[in-house]
Length: 101
Image (cartoon, rainbow, N blue to C red; front, side, top):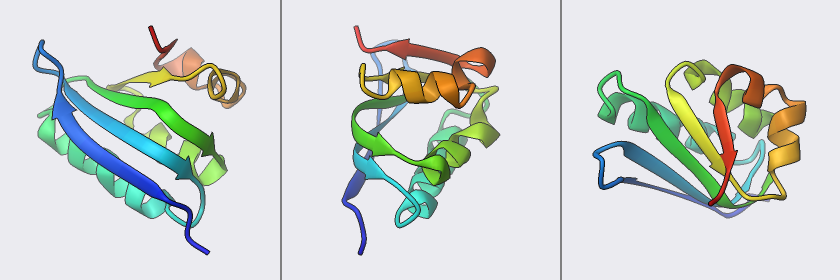
């Protein structure tokens, strides 16, 4: 069964590309999440881009794995529920991972 996930791309007022994910990210939709990350990376033209996970309720190892190829260029924003998961996965050691403000 597929888990609902939506990904939208926009821009911050400073011009940074922002990929906003909503729902759950797991093995059923990790490929779609990876494709959205690739698209945001392409749209940012080599600059850092933001991945907003504040509306993500769950992320499994497949979803986390989709983030790793982009760690040198992304900044993560997460909700308090996901922050420990990102820490355990080591993402906060290799990229910017901040709770929502």
